[in-house]
Figure 1 (cartoon, rainbow, N blue to C red):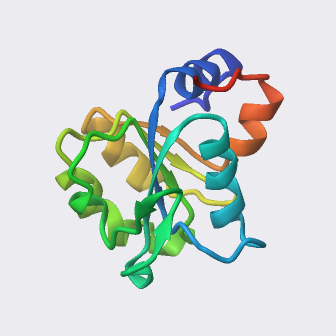
Figure 2: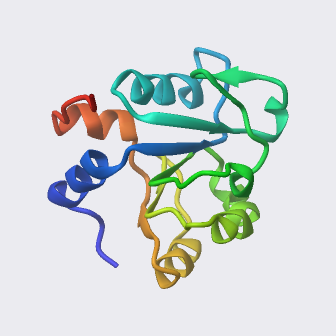
Length: 144
């Protein structure tokens, strides 16, 4: 499948409201911390997922250990996991109810086979792009 064009990326970023960040982190120098912080500042509802984050809180919400334990609908899953670890989360993504509309693999993260399986399940997939960089580049207005 062809990569997303600007119009498609704009639609995703403008219509998504709730973002689950898989691999979210609390160390401020890590992209898995400052990218979701930027999204939060732009008005997105950010839910953090990291199995090592039990008992922590980010963006006013508890850090969850699994995607399928979030308990609320998610528009976009923003993935900060190495490409070789993505398949470990496939069951979690597929078990989400409702399923997310979009799974977004951050810059440098790609798994074409998994992307095809997600698409076959009706989930849109963006690979190897940064949500922060695309949001800024496209001039998306903050959600209010």
